[in-house]
Amino acid sequence: MVSDHQDQRTLEDLDPSGRLYNEDLAPAKHQSWRSYNFFAIWMSAIHNIGTYTFVAGLFVLGLTGWQVLISLLIGIVVLFTGMNLAGQIGVRTGVPFPVVARMSFGVWGANLPALIRAVIAIAWYGIQTYLASLAVVVLLLRLDPGLEHWQRQSFLGLSLLGWACFLLLWVLQLTVITRGMEAVRKFQDWAGPAIWVVMLGMALWLFIQAHGHIDMNLSIHPLSGGHATRLILSGAFLLVATYATMLLNYTDFSRFARDQRTVVRGNFWGIPVNFILFALVSICVTVGSLTVFGKAITDPALIIAKVPNTFVLIVGAIMFIIATVGVNVVLNFVSPAYDLANVWPKHITFKRGGLISAVLALVVLPWKLYDNPVVVNYFLGGLGALLGPLFGIMMVDWHVVKRQQVRVEHLYRADAAAEYHYTNGVNRRALAVFIPTALVSAVVALVPAFSSVAAFSWPIGVILSAVAYAQVMRGHRPSDLSAAERETA
Image (cartoon, rainbow, N blue to C red; front, side, top):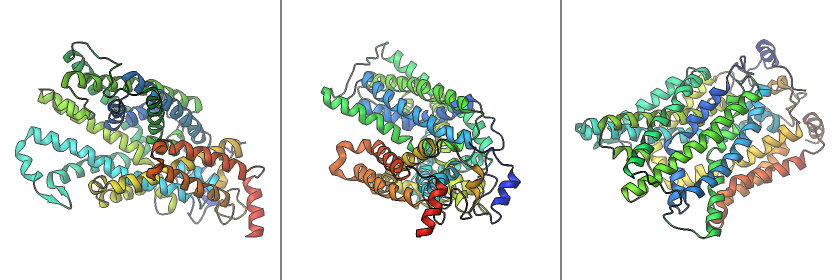
């Protein structure tokens, strides 16, 4: 059965060297988060410019409003199911993602998935902060056109005004994350709902401007049945891939839940219900922009800019900035803080991991990353393709191989007799599955010859790795593998 959470002193005694344990990586002391907290997390993760642009993009590609909704529904069902499967691990063990990865990859091998997740998060953290800072720049120039002088002077490829706005958001986000997970929870509780004010306001304004005529059957480029079906399915799995990072490290949040029912209930209101409503509003806004302005506007900030009221612009811009900060904290900040702490627990705490992540996100000059299609499409896209195989291995390990049973205290033991030591701290079977399936997933995602199925790289990676891992681990428990492989090593 699953081990009860050990007291902190006992776990620390199991790892006196500090190579596997610190208080942030230990099982959660207090599992008190309610369903609303998870609902609010999903509002922050979903209510942002990126999600609106994704929804609007499907419409621009030729799907009708109803077809966009069908595409999103398929993706939402997959996402909801995956989050519940991943969330259960956090509830049952109370440990964050890099510690969970020790079960399948070994106590040292877990650093591989943790660092892959961290690199993706750090890069996108910087990029999202930069994109949010652009909204601040637009807002300041609207309020004081004289600031244009600072916009014309640059340093390292960014204007001085851009630097000021970027650093402002950088500090604000750092203030939240360095106060710990409880501060993150409190921030998400109110940040998530904030964007609804703007989105509903935009929808109502466009509805009035369109004289009540919002045609959900409207299509910019009518598609044939087969083409529309493929785009609907592609959109569904692209949606899932967008949140593949969250699927992998959802235990970072679910570890604080009271029980599994709390997570499922929060996920239900946050994913199917909330996402569908947000998608409906986004579709209506996109269709409304086409009706009112003669073209579909995929950036909601540009729609707000068309409202002839400075106060509305200010409020709207602030709300979108808050929304971007919210999604950045959820998707791109919490995980690398834990992931980096896992590399050197004795010296890197959650707060220090967050600080290192923030500094790295600054020094990589994210505006240069964003402007370089090779970096975004091939480097970050290639790393993103690896998330499917990682998810498949970890889910099969927990739900099939381990049968939802784990000796939590052994996750913090580095001795050869420990359950998750495998061979020198690495599960070679997991690596033997991950490397080829990750390669296949990356090829599908990046090689132009496979462009017609590139959107399905995530499910392909999940299925291949899940089936292969179930086969290579059949009939073996970790302790059996460790003994047998050490004899032949």
